[in-house]
Length: 281
Image 1 (cartoon, rainbow, N blue to C red):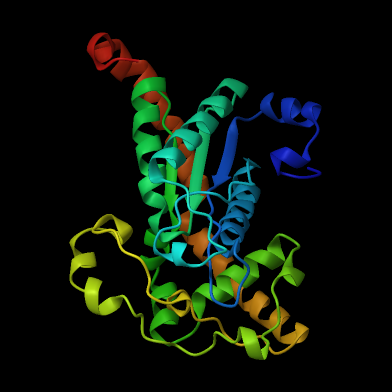
Image 2 (image 1 turned 135 degrees about the vertical axis):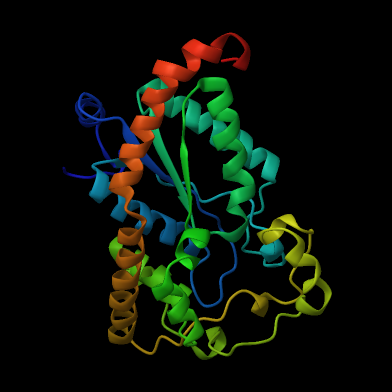
């Protein structure tokens, strides 16, 4: 295929694709302060992961979704903050459009910590109202279940920066990642200024769901390895691409897509005929 990114295709290419398949991957991002990396860092890493997934399962990609709930990083004036409620409604409308277009199998993925608050309600409500099972891959949860990922973090490596910079390279945007300058050096790990206040509270639920809070300093999110030169940036990108590919491979998305199809057939053949009168549509 010339491209898998839907917005880069011409209409006839989309229609030709839909004549043989109905799968689209939707990376959900954010625009927020992120150490020494561009503000769309967590959008880029979601799009890079989506690209790897789409290649494996012959899917298209709906990208350019960088404005959702950011969270505690709103203290940074570069952070774009959208309410959770507005994000849910917007994403639901996108899912509805995609279904009408013919994309019955939709996979949503994000590496932004609070993204689950936006995506999970869409998955559940859309299923109940449209009888269409969307899949949400919470990459943060999935990756932390991977021993290779956990080992890399415990070793003290800047794993998240590796993944993000690798994703920029996958997208052909590596030059967007700036080299470290004296005024933009985020390489030191500085204690999170909010931690004394939220250390116990944040354990009560997942991610940002436990209690609302802000960071106290822009340095609270996130340390970034020094990038000394273009060659060093490429070295980090190569490392990140290798790890991101391994993490996506471990998800076995081919099996997940097959399971989505079987689940849909089971619903249509058994569940709706049996319970359809009262479970709604």
